[in-house]
Image 1 (cartoon, rainbow, N blue to C red):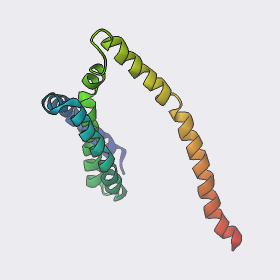
Image 2: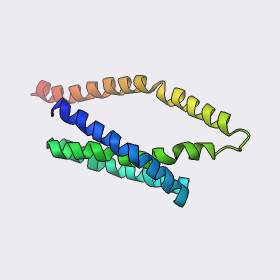
Image 3: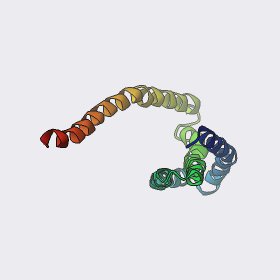
Image 4: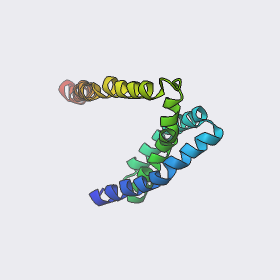
Length: 139
């Protein structure tokens, strides 16, 4: 897979997001923020299977389409997210409450994420090596 293809796909996906984020924000004004966010969460969960299936084909056009479409379920959630978070607080606490929640979530969830990913990679790499080596050792 060429680097230019992936870069072009991400660029096109970003251009699509430029339109779709405000569109889904507007949609959340019409049908409700929670409903829109839940639709996005379900779409993201379901699209993951389609995405990896398309990427696994290694067909450049399928990979390109998978990358471009992958941001749309994300945008369904991202469009109404700021308003959804802000509306979770009373007007008096809205700015500080949403900011504090957002910042703490990034520290608590985002801070240890590289450490967790490294530990999982190390654990599962060892398991995969032992499974692939053990049949050879038994033979």
